[in-house]
Image (tube, rainbow, N blue to C red; front, side, top):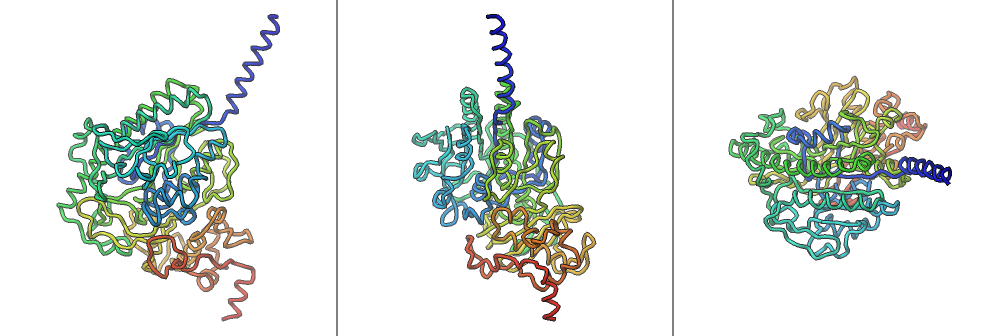
Length: 559
């Protein structure tokens, strides 16, 4: 009997080891609202530095693909670009939660897919704009084991947020700080997830450091009472593109007048309030980590991500506070991940985007990828980074509609802000290119000019050893290929342009043999009108000319 009991104990131990090795990982996903990367906000978050930057890997060239809250979150939750979700705004007719539902995404997005794989799923905070006290139950957001949603119109009221638990009636919370409520509910969800024992996903979405918004008016963020006197005298970083003496940027941005001292002082206060509001987010991070550290076995099997839905600018290129513009401050956002196999205290610099997040979670969880994903798994672990052969060197950026200036002095700043843009970051080159619906163009060498002060589009000369004219023709062809791309075309556009298989990067495409094809035969990115949504009748050419072996022969015959 003793022998049999020993055998049972050994077998049980082996089973436990095997089960631990094969159990799907957990995910905790923290997403802030409008947090910058380029205005140093992370420098004022010691908890994020301690628990994420020091214990994980920072992806310093991670981009949202549309710089606006609702469409960015929908792209993030579906792995699809905004031109494929058709959710491109924060409200009707082109965006908001009702648009998310009408386009069918409430039946096919991340929590539903994870539940199908045995995950319990939780969410606290803002899901998306238009998720309100009148729309939350028509229908309910699907796929969540438990939820505590922040609902409009009080989503952005820091001391009276509307909280809607599971399928209960929404409740106002006067006098309670919303980020602290998010922390409390997130820890409660974590306790429930741990007690159930199944793999879990927990989404945590405080509104900090978003402006407090009442009736469409964007006022400075409101910090928790305990943080309201921190950082006296703190100012917006005085980078080269902050309120420059010479106009910069493109299209309507280039028409902005220089900010006077009253506006600059206001912007400094606006910035300081954002940093103060992030202190409660830091407390939230600490509270989650404290609970996880009480359960080391759970922590050791959990990937934690810290990111933002989009970036933010304050005073750059003379702009009032806001996002939506084709500038680095608005698109390049924080993305830090820690967990099993993730390098500690590491930073990487290859381009990734929000459309890559769902494929990355699928990859980590061992879930087969969907053909419809417009992104690809990020090599997040040290092992994956060593094994990767090649990745996309580009990120496709897009926007439709008007700019959304915030604060007290932004009424005259803005115009139709529709554009297509691409960032190309490859082997010894780093380029930004934008085509506006007004037919304005911008081209920047981001190594020499990271603040986008000197538009070299249409100039003579060269960068990276290439003629600017010939380089522009290639990048325009790349952007056209991405303009209406789906699936693998979004991640492997050069292979679409060159199906022969001999072009996989901008460097390959710069071969002289393709000069005539790109400068003479390829269609150009253009718009026939500036519209507020993705309306293909006004988008100009949507597909490129494909290079064939006869391309050069036919051109020579025509000449």
